[in-house]
Amino acid sequence: MTKNQTNSTLGNSKKKANNAPKLDRGFAGQDIISVSQFSRENLEHIFAAAERMRTTVKEQGAADTLKGSVLACLFYEPSTRTSSSFIAAMSRLGGTVIPITQGVQFSSVSKGESLPDTIRTLESYADVIVIRHPEMGSAQMAADYARKPIINGGDGIGEHPTQALLDMFTIKEELGRIDGLTVGMVGDLRYGRTVHSLARLLCLYDVQFKFVSPEILRLPLDVMNDIRDHGVAVTETYDVAEIISDVDVLYVTRVQKERFADLSQYEEVKDQYVITPELMEHAKEKMVVMHPLPRVGEISYHVDSDPRAAYFRQMENGMYIRMALLAAVLGRA
Ligand code: NCD
View 1 (cartoon, rainbow, N blue to C red):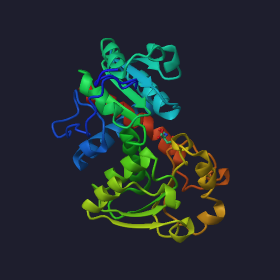
View 2 (cartoon, protein in one colour):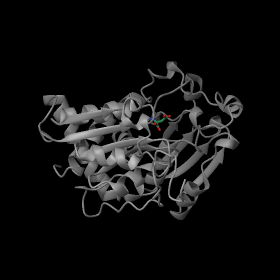
View 3 (cartoon, rainbow, N blue to C red):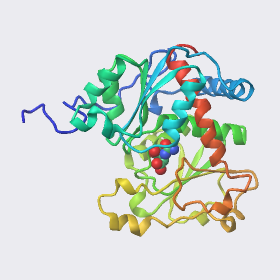
View 4 (cartoon, protein in one colour):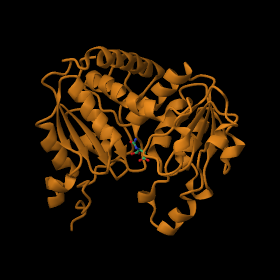
């Protein structure tokens, strides 16, 4: 093997720190790699578009805004909501999809094709590519090679920007505002990419954080430093009961089993937090419980009928946000 060769699917690594540009000149033709690209104005623009998408879906079911456009969905990791909501979003706007979602093993990736070559291939057929990949930095790498817009659908333990957009949209829809809120984040703050993106995006607003995790799953230092740089107040605890009555948003996450090198450590922490109706008795009357899903026991099914349980509405919002984003990056907003 020469210096530049690698056996990673990332190919000859051109991996750099995130350098996706800010979206201050609009979304058309842009990559969506990190929440650091977004301003409050960008968010307001996408939220307003998502509202219109919801109305279109409720009133007409579909539109032909993206008629003739093609989305490639390239998923190297499992997905239900992200992949199917992107597919539904494209379909409801009249576009079509190349779905490499359930079977990267059936594509040339299983023959050892590198990520850059797979991206070059898909961009000759599609107008926009959504990628989910287990390695942090993979979406940025895909963007470095691609001429067409790349959307990050989750890069390992890095970021999941479109999830953060739909999370923020949900908070705004449910509570009517984001400024002034206290946000509790519970569970796997170390490996949970949705937490990393949402925490960073919330820093554009006047919020406070209360983080709850086992010691080994505390928020990574780089995310914590970003939060502190924004001057946002933070507390950390191991006990969800300590913060439940203070929070306006309780963002619960799954322990990310697939990221553990030592599964005995996973076993130790996997059932640490369960949100139950008894715990919810101590929560504010007006607050929301959110979860990016899938849940694997962190929220009791008995909480589902509580009006404060927003996770299924949150999931539905994903499609409207992704409709808005696809129309925006394809210049048809
Ligand atoms: C999340 C993910 O993939 O990071 N799922 C999702 O996209 N809704 C959360 C998770 O898998 O725990």
